[in-house]
Structures are given as C-alpha cells and as structure tokens.
Length: 241
Image (cartoon, rainbow, N blue to C red; front, side, top):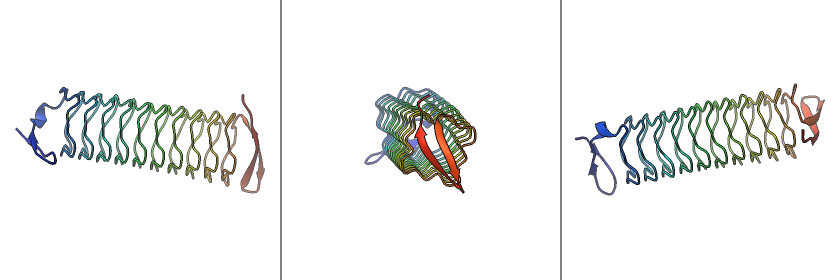
C-alpha cells in the first residue's frame, strides 16, 4: 500500500491498482500522483484540483466533468482521454501530450499549454480564454467555436486545424503557422498576426478589424480580399464563400 497524500488528511490508496480503476466522483484534491499510471481510469466527476500529476499517464481515462483546476499536469499523457466539460482552469499542461483527446466544451481558461502536443485533438466550444499555448502543435485539431480570446498563440502550429467561428479577439498569433487552417467566420478583431503563415487558409467571413497583419503571408488564402502595402496587408473585406 502506497500512501497518496491528500490535504487536509491523508488517504491510503494502492497506487498500483489505479490503472483502469473506478474513481468516479472520488476526491483526490491535492493528491501526489506524479508519474502515476491512470490509463483507462474512470475519473468522471472526480475532484483532482491542485493535484500533482506531473508525468502521469491518463490515456483513455474518463475525465468528463472532472475538476482538474490548477493541477500540475506537466509532461502528462492524456492521449485519447475523454475530457468533455472537464475543468482545467489554471492547470499546467506544459509539454503534455493530448493527441486525439476529447476536450469539447472543456474549460481551459488561463491554462498553460506551452509546447504541448495536440494532434487531432477535439476542442470544439472549449474555453481557452487567456490560455498560454506558445509553441504548441495542434495539427488537424478541431477548435470550432472555441474561445481563444486574449490567448497566447505565438508560434503555434495550426496545420489544417479547424478554427471556424472561433473567437480569437485580441489573441497573440505572432509567427503562428496557420497553413491550410479553416478560419471561416473567425473573430480576429485586434489579433496580432505579425509574421503569421496563412498560406492556403480559408478566411471567408473572418473579422480582421484592427488586426496586425505585418509580415503575414496570405499566399493562396481564400475568402478574403487583401492588398499588400510594403510588409503590411490591407484586408478590404472577408467574403462568405
């Protein structure tokens, strides 16, 4: 039996038996679970807020409605995790692996996902307001209707990602790689797109009012009328196509 420390009191759980365990609605707030193997574990509606899960394995775990707010998930593995409506506000997911995870409607407000890997991740309607995703890789991700207001998306790789109807108002997209991305009717009001790669992106109906487009690359982009003036672009009108 290995002791998992939980404040304000300690609860003893056999950490070796957590893989595939049923911990639905369990209270693991402030638990020390670094490098724990929670693969396939049912944590639906559990409270794991402020827990230390650095390097933990949560592949295919059920994290629906789970409270992971302010948890330490640095370098953790959440590939194919079911995390719809999961609360990850303020969580640290630096260099974590979220490939093909289901995070639709999840709350990641203020979360840190710097250099995280999110290939094929589903983030439709997710709240990422003010989140830090600097350097993250979100290839083929689905962020339809996601809220990325004021998020740090500098140098993020959005290769062929779906950002249709996403709210990117005031977001930092400097040097972001949006080649082939779908930005249909996205709100980019006041966003910083300096040096962004928008080649072959779909910008039909997008709102680029007051956006910084200096040194951005719109080669082959569809759905927007642009005219280059030196290193800057004037976007006359985004067209619905």
